[in-house]
Image (tube, rainbow over all chains, first blue to last red; front, side):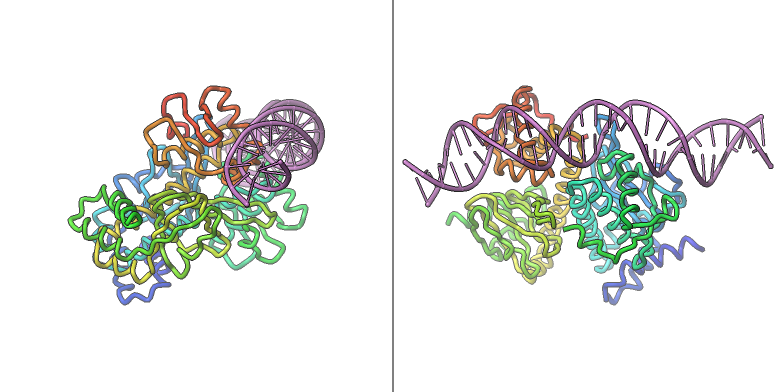
Length: 227
Length: 227
DNA sequence: CGGGCGCTTGATTTGAATCAAACTGGGTGG
DNA sequence: CCACCCAGTTTGATTCAAATCAAGCGCCCG
């Protein structure tokens, strides 16, 4: 069935870079151990990481956030297909929510993880890789957060988002999240995000077919803008 | 000699939580493989992570930063004794510098790391622990960066710094870094940092025997202020 | 003893938050 | 089917906080 195919495809892609002999077997083992769940937009999906479980996003988008004492929501991380949840057990103050409908997550019980890691070295490497990917994601975001002007922040953020999004390589970016989400991820007000995007449009950096359908006009310079 | 004692002590402390049978042997193995170097203030110490090497800070403080295109320096991470460097190979755009004189770093060649990990499972776990510690550090900092007012940012930052500093448990904090470093880590202007600290002092949150010697007046509420 | 760095404080400017309001499109219920 | 509604987005006006510009102070180090 469709779900099974997604699981296999994602894990296969994740293990593509490795030349491990047991890659095929590892994908099968992951597939067998995975419990796939489907989530609706704005639905809390804490259960996929409860009790030391580890989740792998198969489709859709997930946000990790916390609510500050002043009532502001702060989004710490945004996860797309292939990203892992729960590799670093985090405080209960953090929530995990599906951003889009039909968000699919494969989750693994801690014993399963331990068994899989023992059995397939390549899975151990996979988990390490995904953990370093999480570090890079956080560092990239810190770099964007640290920019001075709102225009720089929003611009840099959109560039990063494009890099991590399915239709990479093209100049298009379908925004999986709302202006509110962007604002709460960058620590800006919604109005400021909207204004920044309008300015980017006026400057000809991007064009918008609709509020969610962006297209970058210039050449892809994503990472360069991060320095 | 003194160096050897430091190495053994730090590694011993890092492995304290684990009940591994081979803990003593692991400390010895780490000790034998470590190449300890000493650094002066503001000295670039890129070589400890060059070529896939991994470093462990034994004493002093180290900053990881990059220079943005607008000339601003952005400090991404601050490392104290026990923290590891180079666990996640990062882009060449990042620099690593000793903050204080007599900064001591033990570094390990990649082959050594591989050998140690194979030989002592507890070392494999150590590296994983230190990697998750790095993730938590980044997340904590993102949380502080995301605060709205400069007062909140500086206050939260000082609290975090106290948690990670040797004389933890007391209300004292000897600032290992300058106002400039704090500013570049929080994305604020030096003057703003200075003003925020003055305000904290006026409000009676902290007292200052000298610009670097802080004492928190209220009870320790560090992590609570982060929500 | 001088110089420079780190820190602090003050005055002004600038950019983002806030307050306010209008517009859009998709979905619902009458 | 249409009116309505609502969440998401955009724009404008005002306020406020931090950057910037400017200058003085104390101190360590050469």
